[in-house]
Amino acid sequence: MNTVKLVLLLSSLAGILMIIGYFVAGKAGVMIAFILSLVLNFGSYWYSDRIVLKMYGAQEVSAESSPKLYDTVRDLAQKAHLPMPRVYIMQKDTPNAFATGRNPEHAAVAVTTGIMKILDRDELSGVIAHELSHIQNRDTLIGTVAATMAGTVVMVATVARWGAVFGLGEDGGGRTVGLIATAIIAPVAATLIQMAISRSREYLADESGARMSGKPEALAGALAKLSRGAQVKPLDANPSTAHLFIVNPLSGSMVMNLFSTHPPIEKRIERLMKMKL
Image 1 (cartoon, rainbow, N blue to C red):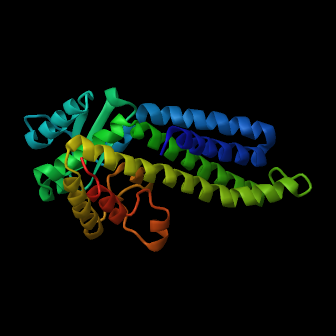
Image 2: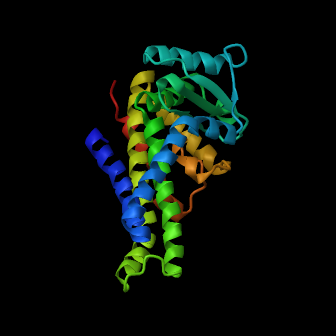
Image 3: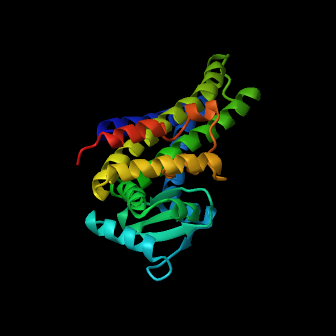
């Protein structure tokens, strides 16, 4: 996804939030929604990495305690000219991984114990390169902002629905109708926009990660293994953090697949296998 499209999608999320604010409380509601989004995004910018690492019980490791993982991260970070991120392991049987942090200087890479059991060295390198690409491409910040904005829209839309029930913003019926319609449509639109951003960034991280590791077929093989592992042992993940993981950690019903933060695994593998380095 190019920069212009990304800016347009993020701006659309902000616009949806402003529209809900207007129907809830007029011009004052627009300002309140704007301030709320700024506060939540500021909090996410500074604290989201610590929150998500603690949420999944991730423990920091060193070159001494986990040499295979640490050395892989270090070697690839040096190759990509990135600062060395902090390295974490989650005690989870489900094979998965994610990167977090507001910028490359304050980044972390976390993998589950499950991933260490089923991937060979080349496949692990592919996964780590994918996560380092998210850091390099600033996806850790972009994804957090998009998720925070979409979550704020859903939260404000909930307030709007209650406002419609109690006649908030009623002006002879016009604003109330708009309030009800917006409260129903806005969360769906915001979620779809967030999904579009997340899916595009996954494709980009696959491509740049394959180039970083030099072995797209190894990353493709890792994705196939991780997808099967996630289906056999779904991770007890918070949906608000699903976009962080290399494969969707949530068990997928048809409805969940429609609103997935990740592209179909088959398409990701197909694109990787067609790469020529």
